Each structure stands twice: as structure tokens, then as C-alpha cells.
Image (cartoon, rainbow, N blue to C red):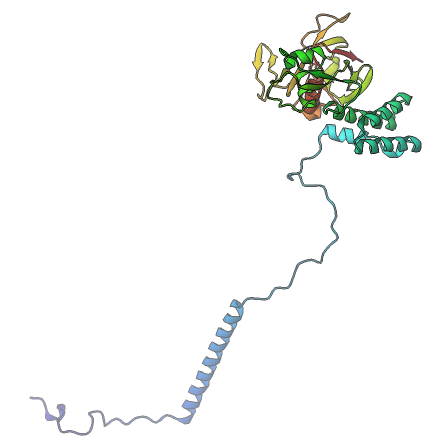
Amino acid sequence: MAPKDDFIHVNQKTPPFSGFKAERKSPFFWIILATVGAVTIAVLFLIVRTGSQNSAPVEKKDETPPPVEEKKTPPPADSKVKPPSREERRIADKKPPEAQIPGDLASRIQAAENMISSGNLVEARKMLYEMHGAATSPGPALAKIEEMIGKVNIEIFKSDIPCPEKKLYTIEKGDALVKIADRFKTTVEAVQTANRMDPGSHTIFPGKTLCIYQGEWSIKVSKSRMELRLFDGGRLFKSYKVGIGRQGRTPSGEFEISMKQKDPVWYTDGKAIPFGDKQNILGTRWLALAPVGSTDKSLKGYGIHGTWDADSIGQATSNGCVRMQNKDVEEIFSIVPQKTTVIIED
């Protein structure tokens, strides 16, 4: 049996370990403990503060540069602004400076411009033709006068403004626009435009009066100047810039317009390339030329046509045909009828 001392008596009041006395701590212990605690708290405070400063947003200085006077610079290569074509640059370079026009002639030109602005087109044209006839040599003044003649003539042609070249015709029973156009040596498009008719309709009514421009048309093409000049009765009507054949392929001689075609098909190497195909180079209009007079009758297949390549105007790049900008060939197409004489000269 175990000795009695190994058991705790139930009625015992003193704890079993009461024999061990608690060790009293020295004052220096508490001082050291307090110091360590204070240092620890200080270190933790510094760590927390440093972290909060690093995470806080930093105020940025306004780095926007001061306003600088705007300078005009050319558009970048990828800009949507289309650079001028070679033909536009060439025309701009050759545009005659009005400062070179003599003062008295410049005043007359200004007077003609004022007449045009006021709607007095026929009188303005008369003054311009007088100045044109008096010009003795090419120069800025002549170029300006011819430019104005072309503009005023087209405006008169496309309107119902009375002028000596226009005739009044009353539609008769059995008439058709084609017959009327042939009678007056004009085109259906010209009759429709001058009388504000629907270009998509050929319907006409007996008794209605038409105003018709009756011109005596002829065309001259200068290969050296790369210029097509339209004449009415020997007077300049309007001039146009053109492109010609490379390596002298555009023939000289007398021709006449033998066929006219809208939205032309291009025949090459035995193939028919339809209008709208990227390989069709004829533009929007085709005026076939047939040799007449003493011109070599083997010179076939040439013509005046439009182009999709505006840069070829003013250049010798075609296979021999005379090229015009589409808007220009469409204008010529609407003015001149078949059998109009075309002279091509060096």
C-alpha cells in the first residue's frame, strides 16, 4: 500500500504545491521589460507609418507645357487629307500669276468678271472675245482670258439664256429628241440640259418650245501642248488639258468622231473588258476617231476617252489615244455630235 503522504486529504486547506514560494521579481526586470515593450511599439509604429506613406497617392506636378504658337505643318503620311495629284500640282505651278497682267488689261478682265457675277454672261463673253482677239502672244493675260471664256461659254450652253447661237424650236407631231438633235447638229444631252428636261426620259410633247444651241463644232488637239481646244465657228469655246500616247504613238492628221459610247467596253488582245472592271482603262466615255481626208486610212482604233488615272493627264503615257479627265470627256461628249472634225497636230 502506498504511503499516506502520497494522497491529498479531502479536508486539506493548503494547496499541494504550497510548499513552493513564488519568486519575487527584481525592479530592474520590470524596467527592462517596459523598455523592450516601448521599443517594440515604436518599431511597429514606424513600420505601419512607412507603409501608409508608400501607399498614399503622390501629388503630381502639372507637366503640361505652356501653350506654343501653332505652326502649320504638312499632314502626316497616314492623314486622311489626300495629297494633290501630279496634274493638280502641275496646273498649280503653271497657273498664271495675275500680278503679271498689265494694269489696263487687268481692269478689263475685272470688269468682265463683274459682269459674270451680275449674270450678264453674253456681254461678258463679248468683252472677253474682244480681248482674246487683241492678244498677240501667249502669256498670263491670254491664259486667264481663255479660262474665263471656257467657263462663261459652258454656263451659257447649259442654260436657256438667249444668245445668237440659240434657236427656238416648237416640237411637232412625230418629232423625237434624236431627230431634233440631228437637225440642229447637237446632242440629246445638250437639248435636255438647256431645257431642264429629265435626262432619263426622252418623252416630248408637241407644241412645247425648246431652246437649242446650234454650234459649228470642231476640235484641235496639240500634242506638244497636251491640250484639246473646242471651237464653235472658228472661235475658241473651251480648252482642256489631255494626255497623249507615249513614244509618239498618237498620230497626227484629220479625223472625225465616228462613234460615241457611254460606259465603254475596252477591247484588247481579243478580249472584251466591261466597264467597271479594274482593267478597263477607258474611263466613263469613248469617242472613236476615224481618219478622213488625206490622213492614212489605216489609222484605226484611236479615240478620245476618259481615264481613272488623273496623273496621266499632261503626260505621254497612253497607247496612242487622247486621254481626258472623266468630267471633261463627259462635258465634250454632251456637246459635240458624231461626225465632228478632230485635227491632231504636233
